[in-house]
Image 1: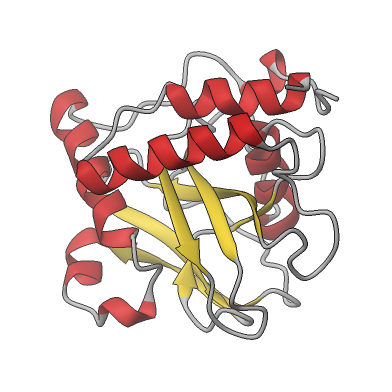
Image 2: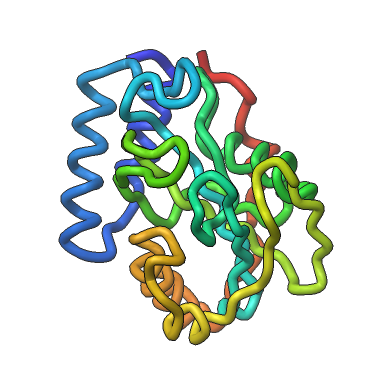
Length: 209
């Protein structure tokens, strides 16, 4: 493995599964990373057909609301995020996507380790390929002002967790309800979502190639 691929494999193996589906997808993702060095998107829109993505789920410190964007191409309300560039650490991708798509500096509120992993066949304009997605938490107060990328999103808004539960599931990533279940478990343990002790910016180089 290259250093970049090894870092991704180590990141995947640190995730504690929520349920049997995540356990199976974690195993599949770890095996996929171990057997191929081509885990990064090389060409738009989807070459190779399975590649690595980092989601950035912006969460209120109380853990009872998330900020989602109305994604133009996917036609769904999704967390911001994007493809991991060749040689890039996924946490650095999460930080970069927060800066590019939300206009915020993610260093202080971005959790270094992902909470969740999913393998999903995409939908929408560029649909049909598989995203192996690492879901990172970015803690931000609801007073935060976001500057959205108009080329990517129609709009963005805070969603209360109970509001998501009452909405049509087809409006979101198919695994989003499961992510919220995992998020609630963390909130129940800690009483709130704290800002991370360590910063991704302090610990991670932009390239691991």
